[in-house]
Image (tube, rainbow, N blue to C red; front, side, top):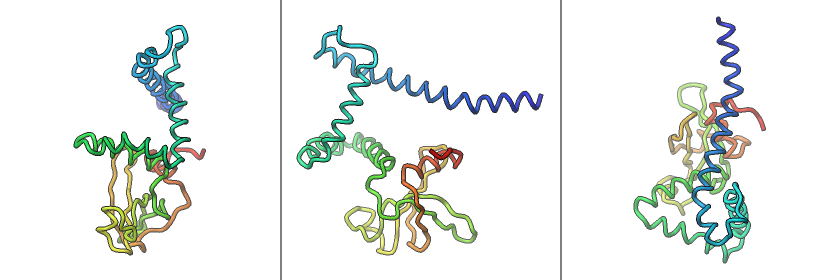
Length: 196
């Protein structure tokens, strides 16, 4: 019986990530199709439209926007919807949270030593975190509240969409040679992920 349970769990550990990933992709594609199909059919004949067309269109648009965002004049245009959302009270909180999370994944807006070990006081333990601000950066609201020798470190929690922001003296952190997006994957998977 013990061997049967062990084999079942081993099989599930192989199957579940695959099945859940495929299911998530199908859900995402179906959602995009349902959101964009009617809009695309306003400008395209139905004979041209095929399943997956809306998803393909969205991916091409996102790539074109990302490419054109490098030019100063165009990037200002793409920033307009975000500025509008930043002015709407409840929407600004939701939009800002999603924008900041995507920027963390992209590795954008990080200080120099972005991924660090945080030394815990009183023992030899350490926690992996991401530096979001330094006290020497007075342009941000948080940087203005910190002294020059302090850093703000985000400590994500494993298997959760939460974490802690701690402000520490610089000498309590040591740099790690890792991209912020990779660090998030390691932390969120509790270090169980494989090297890719």
